Length: 130
Image (cartoon, rainbow, N blue to C red; front, side):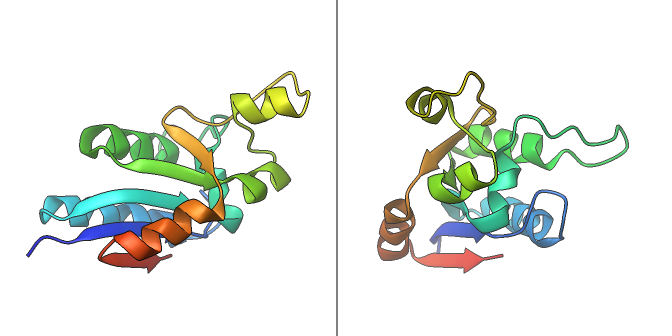
């Protein structure tokens, strides 16, 4: 039986294993035929959406991996807007709203409120937190 999933990622892009584990879980889900509807990045997890992360050449590029997964499987990548702004992860729209000259939210990611997570919790078969 195929299920729908949303993942909640609280771990930073390179500061813990949580985000990488979430990515591996997400990859396994779609390989097994399940539908990953969205990934909600919360707390330090919002750093996964930074366009300014530059891992060493011999390191796994987790942000790029999320972007590729999202494109291939039509997955929404959402960063919590409040948590992101506190950590300097800013979309173009938020940069304009706050009078900032730069933005750094990676392509394929969007900023959303907790309402988006609440809706996912009500509509997906499973919500898994990392």
